[in-house]
Length: 127
Image (cartoon, rainbow, N blue to C red):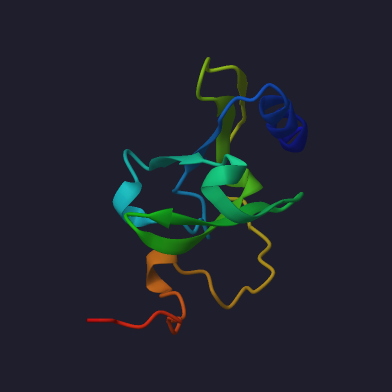
């Protein structure tokens, strides 16, 4: 159902927003943006990279306050998926006690605990 709503929002050229309950075990989001145990995530294709949505979770990489971070949201933590422009979408019942299935269960920490790998720039300083 989540995939269908997401596609419907994109087909109408609206901006998909994902409302996540951060009390669900294994939610991996930037904690500085959590308000009242919830976070709203802009999941528009131009705002994120590596988007994946399956039966277990929604995951992607996005920039928060200038830092690239990995986001992983178990489906049990999704409260709603709706269009920013008009609020159209659907809400879901959250299961706070669900046991999420992670592809790499060893990394159940919050996104800010993971620093992206340093990249070597190809640019030179010219004076």
